[in-house]
Image 1 (cartoon, rainbow, N blue to C red):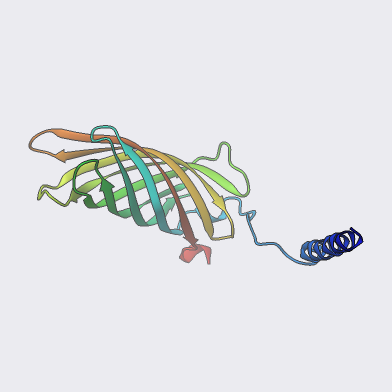
Image 2 (image 1 turned 90 degrees about the vertical axis):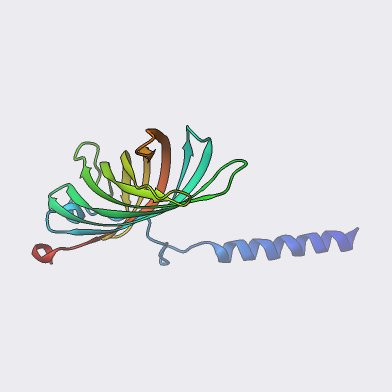
Length: 198
């Protein structure tokens, strides 16, 4: 019994020393999670590069799930307003059917709302309209959508974003069959200073 008591006390001492050494001292820095940027990244003349690393969505018509990669490049034509172009590369998994790869080019316009803004983040709205296609068909289709989201700045030039959007795509223009759906996305943007802001 004494031996078990001594071993338990020794074990508690080792655990206590390990935990106390693992605590962060005030001199050590933690990873940066936000930056006070105000309106500097979204001023006229700046560039925006990045996109959604992945978006998950549910398609109402075909009852399928999808994931996509959406790189993009934009330019701030005015404070709070960026226009640009993005690419769409996606994969849809259909129940009892072959997987479908999709692709497209989608110009966009984005507006950052001054209302509800903080020094570390900004709400935004976005519209996009372009053309897309997919495996299994040679027809190009119209692709349009609206999104709302929030950009949280982790550094002076990098923001993490979350979006919620609605997409409309005409799968085959001649037959009039349409595909619509809601989607959520998580991505990042890099804000580069333009010539006037360097």
